[in-house]
Length: 268
Image 1 (cartoon, helix red, strand yellow):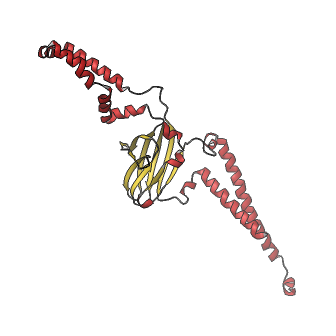
Image 2 (cartoon, rainbow, N blue to C red; image 1 turned 45 degrees about the vertical axis):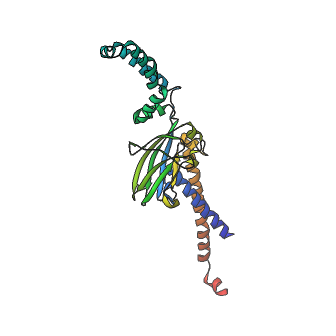
Image 3 (cartoon, rainbow, N blue to C red; image 1 turned 90 degrees about the vertical axis):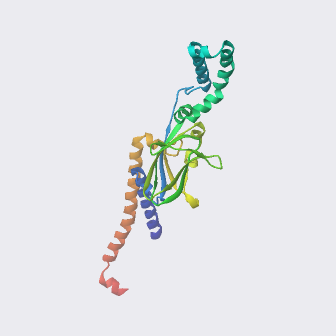
């Protein structure tokens, strides 16, 4: 019976100690792998209908070019009336249609980012650390639309399974990468805790720590500050109870041994 009581006390001590480490923010250092991503998820609300309509841009540019043609003296002197009519009715509508204008806008990185802005629904921000040297490091993020690494625009690739990812390449020992990824509605509706993964070559997998995701068990601990103190107090009480239940039997057994008389020992 004494063995089971000691085992229970040890379990209570370890469990409550780990729980206190979790509340104090130190448990993430326990058995941490060399490659790790610490990320924070935030919603990215945008106004309804926000963005740039390529059709509207194309129509505006065509109208402006027509006005310039009517007001440009050199063009009126160079082209006759029939050619002017053909340029206005045939050439400009074909050059300033939705398809070529949209392609031109997407070829400009700054305009392409603005076009995607209306599709943003959330962002993932954090850091990627590697305690050891790692090769071909990649971070998968569902429905990634725009990404920055160390403050600079970064290319988003698509894996063979259709998942969008950031191929970070090689990382030196102790290197840290600051990452920001904007994701669309499909990504925000997925289980980010299961779909965001980090790994390296030879099938090496890292760990992803995610904060801010909705729906996880115990999420109210983030919002209710008093609950943290309540849980901490309960864990502290369990810790004291476990230590006491472990120490008291040892003290009792020691006192019992020291209270025996020499005559009792010789009689035995």
